[in-house]
Image (cartoon, rainbow, N blue to C red):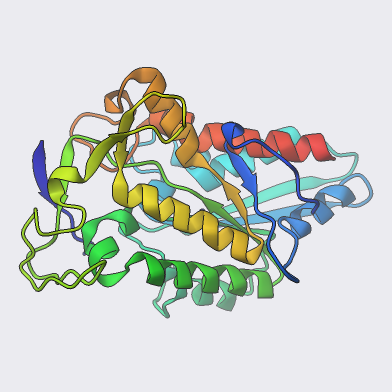
Amino acid sequence: MKLNRYSLGALLVVAMSLDAGAVFAAAPGRQPAPLSHLTHQLNLRNIQPVTITIVGFGSSVGVGATLPDPATQAPVMYLGERLKAAFKSAQKFEVVCDNRSLNGSILSQFLNDVPTGNWNAYLKEGKKPTLVVFAYGMNDGFPAMYNASQPPPFFRSQLVAAIRLVQAAGADPVILTSPHPISTVAWAMPATYNQAYPTAVPAPVGPEQMTPPASRSTVLQDPLGTGRRIPVSLRHLDLNQVMREAARETGCAVIDAERCWFEAVAARGGDAALFNAKETVHPNLLGHQVSYQQAIDAFVVSLAASR
C-alpha cells in the first residue's frame, strides 16, 4: 500500500429502496418537501412551456475529471440529460444545466465569498435554479479536511447551512453521496496540519497517529449487509452518513451514489476496474456509470413513476 499526502492547493415524497440508490429524506417539523419546485414544474409541462434549471457544485469528481465527455457525463450534466429523456411534453420543455464544480473544491467553498464556485457569486448573476446539486465529499473525506480543517461536525453544519440557503432562494437542493477513493492508498496528513478531530494531535502528525491511522484508511467491511466484505474508506463512509443525516434534518433529497458504488465493488471483487491507471480519487467512466449514473437513473425513474 503506497503512502500519499493529499492536500488541497451533490413534491411528494416518493418511497424508494436504498437498493435503488436514491433517498427522499423526510424531515421533522415544518421543513420544505423534498423536490417540491421540481415536481411543480414537471406537473406544468403539459400545460405551459417549462424550463428546469439545474446547477451543480462540487469538486473535480463533479467536474467529471477522467470522463471522455464531461458535458454529458459529469453527474449534474448526466442528471439533466436523463430528465430531458424521461419527461416528454405537449409544450416546450427544456432542461438547462450549469456545472459550477471546481477542481480541488470542498463544501465550505460553496458558502465562501470567493470569485467563482460559490453560491453568492452564482446568485449575483441573477440566476434562479430549480435544482441545486451538491457533488462534494471526495476531497472533504481526506485527512487534511476530515481530521483537520473541516471535521464532520463542521461539515454537517456547513451542509445544513448550504441546504437552507438553497431552499430560501426557492430551489430544491439535492445531495449526491460520494464514491470512495481507491483502496490501495494509505492517506496521510500533510506535514503542516494539526489533527483537530476526533482528538488533538500537533503537527507533524505521523501516519499512525491519525484517527483512523493511515494503515486503516481503507478496511474490509460489509456495508450492504449481505455478508460480503469489501474495501471501504472509513472517513468517506462516515462523511456520506453525515450527508444523509443533514438531509433528514432539512428535508433534502439524496441520490445515494455511495450505495451503488458498494454494489459495484462487491460485484467486481474490488475497485481496481473503477479507476484508470495511476488514478486514486477520480473514478473512470465505468466508475461513474456504476455509481453516480446508476443512482441518477433510479432517481429519474422514481420521478417519472410518480407523475
